[in-house]
Length: 367
Image 1 (cartoon, helix red, strand yellow):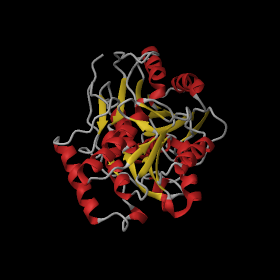
Image 2: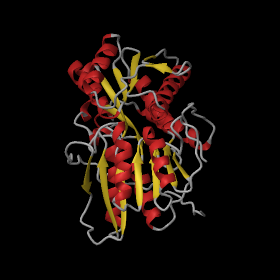
Image 3: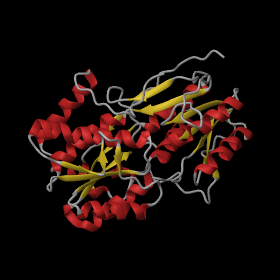
Image 4: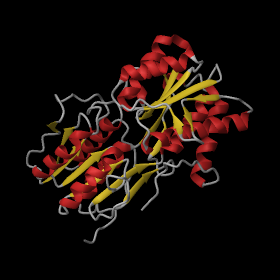
């Protein structure tokens, strides 16, 4: 089947739909996303675990779905919520049975499930966020109807690591992940590189707990929902001297923010995926966030699918196309020096022009 590639536009959508969304009951569940009862095109989303209001990637993806519907009244959007990985297949199949024209699966863990559903339903368009078409063993699979939405978050995390190294008072910072999968470790790799860059350029000796990028080993909860375990893990790192925490764990990362809050003024954090100052209740503890423009990318994918232009290409968000970014410093703007801000601007420019390459084994590659 011939397909037409499309180019995603990532102009600012930071304020769209990122307010807290209402939960919709016991998962798996579904919800109507708007009032477009007479819409001719149905775009459906299947969440990863963590819920539609996870303050992270599910919530951002849903904001993009709603933005597409707001922009084009012929598009109706709905979602089905996955409580765990067992819900992926039934939620995807239910979306097909509901007559969805375009189905967005959120999260790299769902890549094989989306691929299988797409192969069985070639007349339906699919997209996978943070993944590529693959089989159950992770091997690449050729498809005509799965669009891949990915983000080189090593770039934004690099800037976050540089900030952390510039702001730490103890000389020790920490990161940990929900699961050891590429969409998580790519953040941790970038964060480690940013710290190493600061150490090399500024003569510091900031230590990173929780991740060894050379060995690709570190601390993981094996959960994106267990905020209590996230707090316990963070408390341990704080006891080891870490005064800046970088959780890469969706809603489980709230545990790190709770730990930072309980530790008082001495401990702060950096968020991922969204601008945590806006999406969580812990803005006063967040120096910045390593963002990815997931809402924009999903919005544009849905609009392109409506126009018959989705196909099976790949979008990769970068600093250059504003698909990833470092969030504003908000309450910490006065704490981050003008010198550091200028250095961040220079590093950003260097990454964009290619003179500085930030690499991770998990960095996405265009197909």
